[in-house]
Image (cartoon, rainbow, N blue to C red; front, side, top):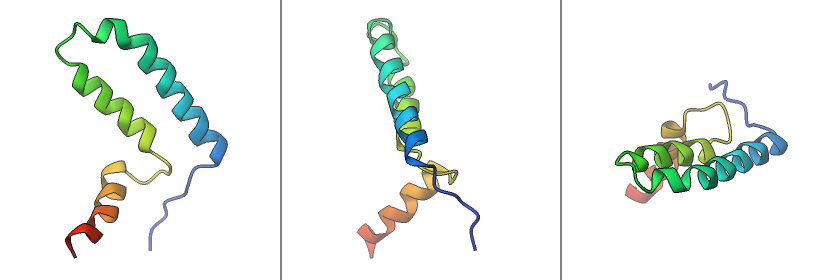
Length: 68
């Protein structure tokens, strides 16, 4: 059916550590920028990615149970 592979735990932890580091380093600069929501939305997408499946597809599959 689908060929999506889950990432190993060490890769997920490395991605999330990088997101926290980039987010903290960028915070003083991003406080004064108008596009900070887009930047932190991108960081949230990177944080949420746990497989090679697109994040939007993964979230759409989990949200479907809210409607049915």
